[in-house]
Image 1 (cartoon, one colour):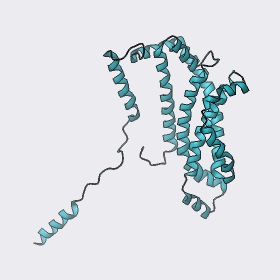
Image 2 (image 1 turned 135 degrees about the horizontal axis):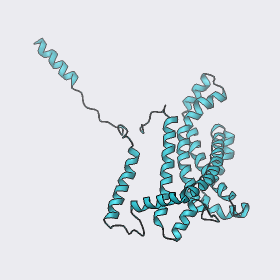
Image 3 (image 1 turned 180 degrees about the vertical axis):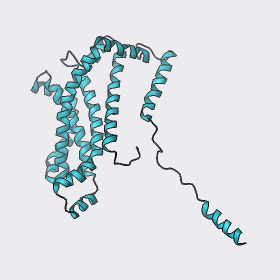
Length: 272
């Protein structure tokens, strides 16, 4: 009888309800490439089936052949180097200004009062709409292109970094005051780690914004660059050349994601 009771108790204890998994599960290796591969396969199949007009959307093999032709002629490399120089200078200036302004506004009430208001106003103004004004002020050379890219990048990075700074839990600030951290150590140990996730989101959005701005800017009084190459392709109905440009944004975002994963390896999130 005792044995029966013991076995009954064990069976009662061992039977537990299965808890549902609420998270997204384990990360799929190279999962972020899966979506583009599916789209590419569907695109290839639709093109092979004659569903797409090749004059409007050429097949992937046509785009690949156009890319290889541009590389063989050196046109793509030369245009890319010119565009990277413009975007790199503007991005560096804009990122520096955006981060400095975000730190001023996020770490000081007086800085917030001075900086945040006009940055929020600037955010609501379409930056590309400032092109005529910048040409009037700076001329139609390279300077206005760099300045426009810098403004686009600075606004994006400021908004995301400032949101990251102001979103830091106040209990961490109280803890830092309790252990008597200096201002410098507080910024290094609490502020910067707390703001890094927002900063990386801003960097990724800013890279995309700089590429998009570059397409427009390099169609104005330019004789080189990716945007100029796309403008020429549009004039000659070379759709495959325009499609090649989309790869740069995807590659840039992928590289930043790798850097983000390395820098924020200490953080445990649903993204893995």
